[in-house]
Length: 93
Image (cartoon, rainbow, N blue to C red; front, side, top):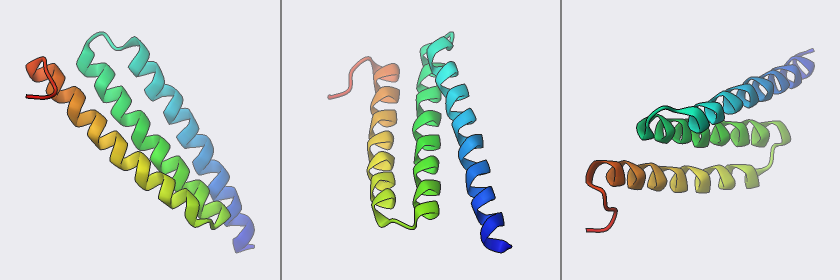
């Protein structure tokens, strides 16, 4: 009974994260300002990170966790560089 409940919880989490990913993509595409688009992109990479972690837990594979780590690092660097570009107009000083 608990294994079935766990599988249902994983599927529900994947569906909810997929819907959140679509909404974040919508915010990124239709954001009225550049800051809204950066925030939507930041939310998208974080939700994708969570989705990959849920997949790793569902399939019990360490490769998904390594992919989540790479996405976290690249997403952080991207968000910082875009925020710096919006603040100063240049990324590299």
